Image (cartoon, rainbow, N blue to C red; front, side, top):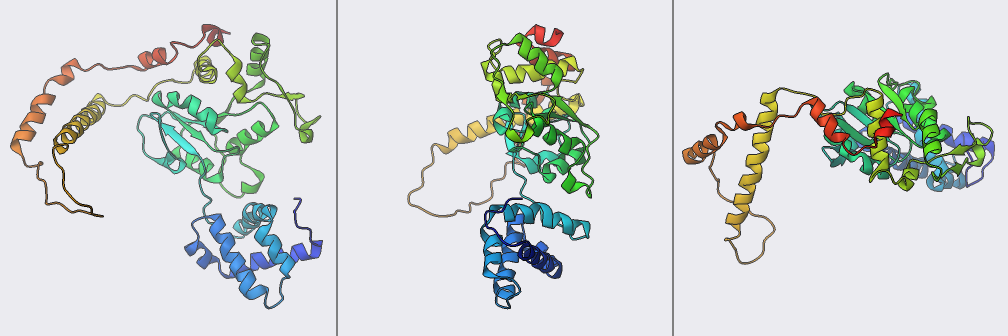
Amino acid sequence: MAYKIKLPKEDMKKLWNAVKEIIREHHQLILNKSESLRDSQYIVRDYLFNEYLPKQKISLEMFNLFKDDPNAYTYFTQDVWTQLEREGYKRPNAKPIGIFYWKEYSYTVDKISAFMPQIRGYIYVEKDGIASKLKELSNYGWGIVAAQGQATRTIRDLIKRTGKPCLIIHDYDPDGDIISDSIEKGSKRTTHLDLINDQATNFLLNDDQVDFLKEKYQNLPIQSLPDKWIGKWKRDYRIELSAFIVIKDSENPILDFVKAEMKRQGIPISLKPVSKSYLFREAVKDEIIWQVESIIEDILKEYSVEGKSCKVRIGDIDIKNNEDIITAIKKSITGIEDTANWTSEEDMEEECLEDVPKEWIER
């Protein structure tokens, strides 16, 4: 690792030994107070400044490197804590950076573990911009998960613990392969953790898909490999997911290509079927809540209270025991199950694939 602040090798060793010593001695305090790895870095920094620096256990140059060098922070979070984990010291949670789409609503990625009875699995995308183009698939049983590049261990752990399949979508390049491998097979820094996901699949982009796209679309943008990969990868070029933007056979080519590949590989493209009673209850609740909210909004427009305040507590509003309201709701619901419009897996898949170019499926 190339540090921006240069120090002799012995000084570097002395600094990192001091850091590990602080964590070992104050581990429980660090865990209790830290909500993130960044928190733990500030706690260690405080010990370095107030105890190690005055006693000349480290130099000012060592302290400044730990405090200011971004590569030092990376080494602290990715290597120091990994070494200590192998000794049995639990690491503070890293912030789960990313987004999660379900039914086209966006959530923080920690909601991946939420109980969703109709979810089939997850589609992990390395870029949040591409994830937003795929969010329609979250209406068809697949939660869309996106970070910024490689999935954090938090995301990998959350996906693995659901026990559901994960389709991995990434650029066609060596870094994309690394992203996929980290989810499928784990990474070097997490070999001591149980993060290998047997249900993860390197879904797209692969050699076969790229060969089809290059032959079909001569204008598909192709990028040069970064210098570090030249001569070390299977091909001498790379293709980004964003390159799909030039394909004119579809309004949303990356979305439709993913749909086509799911169909070709026999992956279900629909919400997971559940009992009709469950669906009926949820649909009725949603409709009633929407209508009641609309009615209340209209009623409250008539009320205007003068002055300003920061908070208010009103008297209890008792509608749960209002027999007229209960009777009206029951009357509204009675019999509507006979006219309900049910959708099958086949219906959903047909609906989802309606605008996908047929040759992408039949190739």
